[in-house]
Image 1 (cartoon, one colour):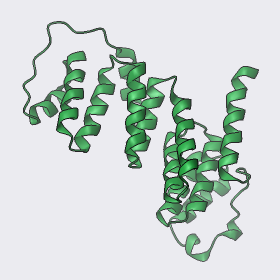
Image 2 (cartoon, helix red, strand yellow; image 1 turned 135 degrees about the vertical axis):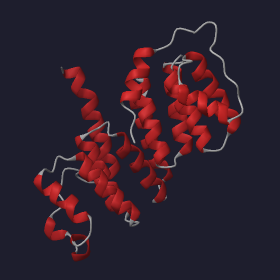
Image 3 (spheres, helix red, strand yellow; image 1 turned 60 degrees about the vertical axis):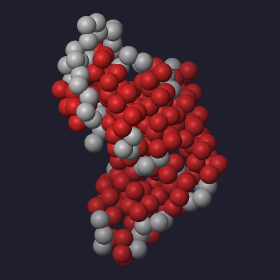
Image 4 (cartoon, helix red, strand yellow; image 1 turned 45 degrees about the vertical axis):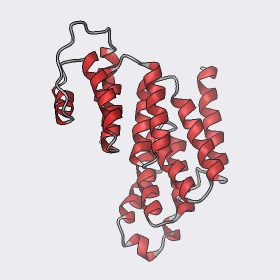
Length: 227
């Protein structure tokens, strides 16, 4: 079991180094301003008071601080969330975005690289991190994660579909068509993909020979898709 604990210890040290503080320190209710107590933050403070080891609540509180332009407080909360859930992909992406917003390019780049390396052994993990980066509008990192996932599972119809949808959202019809075509070739029974290709003006046909694909991975990815 020692070899399993080592990565977690290293990750915790990294998180502490990023925050520059003790991430386990609690947010005290008496340190909260009257305005915060009267806002939606109060619900999150109550959840944290009830159970401090609540990564979701810390992440959501960090997002509120980010929206208020309070970079240090946002960074603090994201680091706490990651201390309790080292693979909280949304918190990872949000922390990187916060460091970018706070004009800390070296730290943001180091954090992004660390999280991508952490996810590099799993196509599903790489995909979920990519979606988290996409959610934060960190497009370069999102694409890098998607390509990392594709390198691990090149015959995944679900991955090609996700990347195709990404390029559709960016109005890049050429690349969207490329990935959606490939997704449909790998799994021609995707009515949703066929519909998107049709809207792109592309007539699709069931291929004569379907390449061996990663059905098990596709199912796992589809089941783990986030909102």
